[in-house]
Amino acid sequence: MPNFKTQFWRISKWFGAVFILLFIFRLIYGYVAGGSVNYNNNYSEDFFSSIENLRKNYASEKILIKGANYQAVPSLSTNQKFEKTASIKTKSSEFEKDDKLIKGKTKSYSAVIQYEQNVGQQGNRQLHLVIGVNPAKFDSFYVDIQKIGLVKTKEITKVDKTNEYRQLNAKKVSIEKTLQSLNELKSRGGEITDFIALNDKILETEEKLQELGVELGNFDSENEFCTVKLSLYEGATEKKIGLFHRVKVSLEWTIKYFAIIVFISLVLSLTIFVLLLIADKLKVMNLLNNK
Image (cartoon, rainbow, N blue to C red; front, side, top):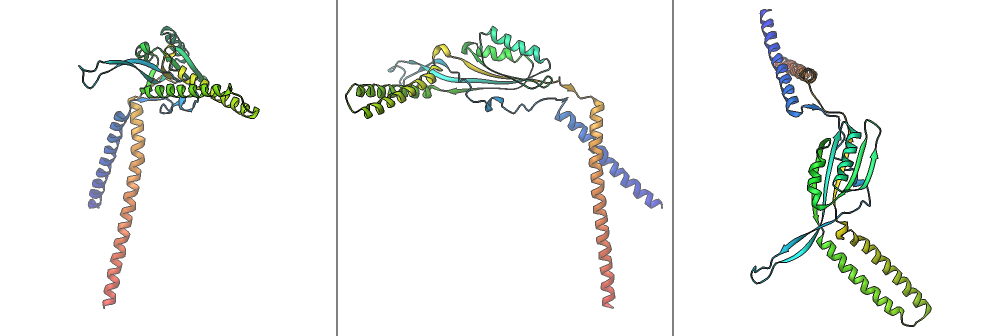
């Protein structure tokens, strides 16, 4: 009997130590993994990726191109066309107030709201804006707008569009030459069917030229903007997790996984015990057979 008590207390101490270690591990993990209760949306989703035909904003800046031999070849100045876009996702516990602040800030920077979408019911509202900002004021606006609400994600991308701009201009020249040639043919005589076909071809070419003109119009200096894509999400203020809550969560987790460990240990012990009994009986059977 004393031997049984000794074994029982020894096993109990081991299980107790495992329980305490699990509890301490989960408590430390809670502090390391996160320090607040977060009521937020999925900020990894991009609302604007599902919207088609959003206005493209382009800007330009002077860049110097130096010759291979700095003394022999003078430096040349040329326009670089680029598309610069900032994406900001912000959470607000004062949605209407921050909505007004954003629009007021946009107006103070002489920026233009080019797209606006309001989504959701009160308590879970979303505001999505595409704002065109003067390139010279872009950096200041980008920094200033982040002071509204609680910024969750932000990024800036800049894409060179110089080659695309040059290709569009080259295409325009080519279409203009084609249109000129077609108009010259129109002045000559010919069959009425040929004249109708030629006229249709001229109309088709003029339509292509107009579409190209719209694309090139985005590159005009008077339309130069950088883009800010701003998403404002309504949500409760993040709350710090208290010690009592951490202890409660850690205790629940520890009890759950401690019970799993105990169950697995019992199953393994019973399995080993049964295997030993089987092995012992096999030895007895072998002894009887030998006799």
